[in-house]
Image 1 (cartoon, rainbow, N blue to C red):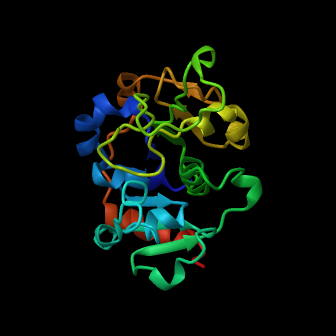
Image 2: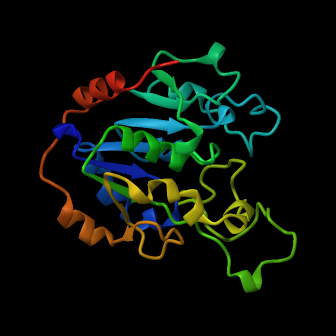
Length: 241
């Protein structure tokens, strides 16, 4: 374990983050934190992760801007981005701040979930503790799910904390969460050497101990980290493809 990385915070997209945004923003400036997908718009983390080529450089952005927001110019200004090797077709668009790495399939059961990819990275950094924020796995009450209706862009179900602020193809797509068991998705981490907390008491992911934000703040150490130094450690930890 690297003492500088004894604890890592991962920012997912679940709506449970919403009331904590203002409190989390200054905290992440002093901690090792992994952002996923569009969370870079609200938080300054240590680095951003993504697993979808169309998130990074959407080929369909001009044709379907509601599903594929073009954020390529914004990504140029982030300090560090780590993407998954499956992001085919991205090499010609690769920015200098972006590293593409590979995670073995046994460690990444579903490459479509950036949160699992981020957790895979965090484990490889061998921290003592990992805090999962916004890992809600929201879904509707099974008794109220319309048969065969898995996508509704006008749905009031807030799967992501940024709601409809950012128009993207995941908006209203809750079929995946209702059709898959999160406990199977995350079972690889059941025997993790790191202590993993799910900071979302109402989360449907049962693999990890669930705690409140108040309790998380009592557990966090007082060490303030230099982000540039952390990024150097992280870059040296992975083989870039």
